[in-house]
Amino acid sequence: MSEYFSDLLYSCQFKGTLIRIALLFEHKSYVDNDLPFQIHLYTGGFWERCRKQKIERTPIIPIVIYNGERKWQPGLLSDCFKDLPPMIKPFIPDSEYVFVDLSSWQDEDIKEKLFVMVSMKFCMLIFKNIFHPEKLKDNIKEYFELASSLFEDEDGLKIIKNAIEYIFKSTDLQPEYVAETIGSVSLKGKELAMTTAERLMNEGRNEGVYSEKYQTIMNLQKYKMKPEEIADITSLTPEKVREVLAAGDKGLDLLIGDNATKQ
Image (cartoon, helix red, strand yellow):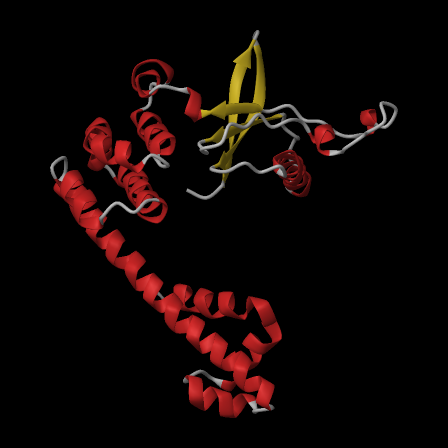
């Protein structure tokens, strides 16, 4: 459920001519005034990949899906510049995009009218209600029942797994409740919820351990201790201590990232 999902490339017929279109999906759960800049960077990056791969550049349609609590109507890139003289505005590369505000939709619109794919209905319902935990709690069984067909294949289970992890990371719903509720729809779903909850708890504990190691390294280096001495205290290698010290503020991310890679 990362903010920048991916770009999807389609070939289709338009008035008898074959055309290629890229759809770029961006997810926002909060008001982000940098959105027009990000879209500009994403589209530029996509076209740069086309250039490097020596393939024809493709028109891009950015689609922004917003499920935040605040009302938001983002503008174009030129709107980000205050007091912009009219003669300068033509030099700002505005890019249009489709803005989808899920807060203005009813659940029934999502379930009955707007989408054909079960996976899309399911994900949209989770997105829409993620900041309303009581409603999500009351309806979570219905949402997973809607997605019951996704439990039958590997790709569907990946979607279910991502949704469960998103719920755990974004709400305070008890893992036991989520697991039991999903278990009434699918035993596979219950098992997936329990293993996901266990993994996230382990990651949280590991993050605490490595945060303590990082603070110890940064404190001891103030006393002019050598990396070899710090390594003995923190149970790390001298090379790793040197990397953390060189990374500075990014040292904790380095430790946690190494641990995640090992797992």
